[in-house]
Length: 375
Image 1 (cartoon, helix red, strand yellow):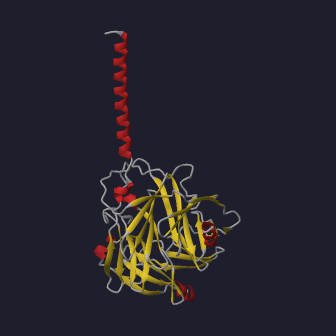
Image 2: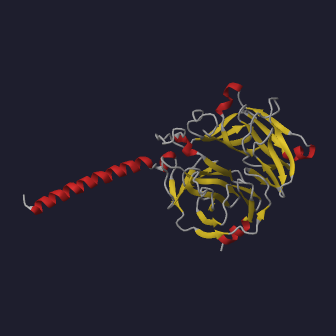
Image 3: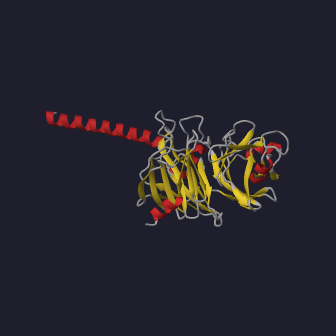
């Protein structure tokens, strides 16, 4: 065999060897990457091709430290959902002054054993209300906030017991919204704090309070054969989300915590549509990125706090510094890069509050965003 033929043979062996290496790498990478669309029973479209990109400066509009890492702001009241002490909720004014502590935990029938953070505070016949769900005993406490502050005691207009003690832990509701006087909608999620086996695939459910039973269910997600590298993380954990309801109670918007996908569910038709923001990193089983951290909405727009960074990194860059704005048709309208990082949102009329876990709060008028989008 001449030298040229030997070189060709050697080159062929090298190319074959490199091809095998490349195929092996691709197989490893493909095992780590996950097709996000497999999780959903409805179409996921791409979004973000022509959205407004702006800087959002919050300098000079910081509010006093009100110590509210997880709160709802309504009518200039800060209702902190932090479970600190024997009371589930603490109410402060916008200057940080404590007004009172309410919803005492206890074992009496008219006391909640536990409580989830509030999804919303609403007005009924002039009074402020919140629906407090005690997941440990499956009771819904209809809390009259206005009367509680006036009388300096816990005032519940109604207490709804859903199931017997044996079935209480089968209802790990992670969000809850009032639809009308006798109906609520909940996200029945696996994030119960007990075990992901209680709810294998989460769903949105409407409950009839007068009948104390399920009246409608929206099955939106698929069973996905996926084994995350973290043994403590179930596949269904990828369906963790944050959500909000349209003020007219016609739609739910939800955005995924572990993938760059947001969705809109029409409660009347039961139809849902999803949108994946183009250009953002895909989902992997060997690293977890914090995508959407919180979401709020008014009649026109949805406001979503976004990170996209690897969770719990040492630099702390997983705390969101991006605000996305969408309309109720699913169109991504704007991306704002903020000059500070925040972990949650609260919307009170035309005021959008940005909240940090250390209690720092900033505020902007949503009218400013609306005017910018309508130019």
